[in-house]
Image (cartoon, rainbow, N blue to C red; front, side, top):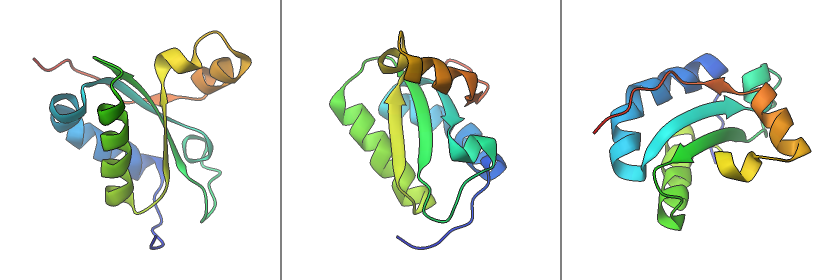
Length: 107
């Protein structure tokens, strides 16, 4: 993949602009950035870590969202569903460092 220098602000702003599309296409009802990009500690080879809540946890939504974001950012994107992160030490650490995009539910 090509080298692109994204910051957490760039990523959050992109997601904010895409909210209606992300809801309609992938069923995203809540989304946040975590990991190295959220902390501002990313390296050139860092992936972008995204925490999502979906209307339905369908494989095609998760896979489609990952491909869509990887194509837009030209970087590896790791998608974690919120319920996958519940009730674990890993999940608690994710939730402490998540920057949520303010969300409006679109119907």
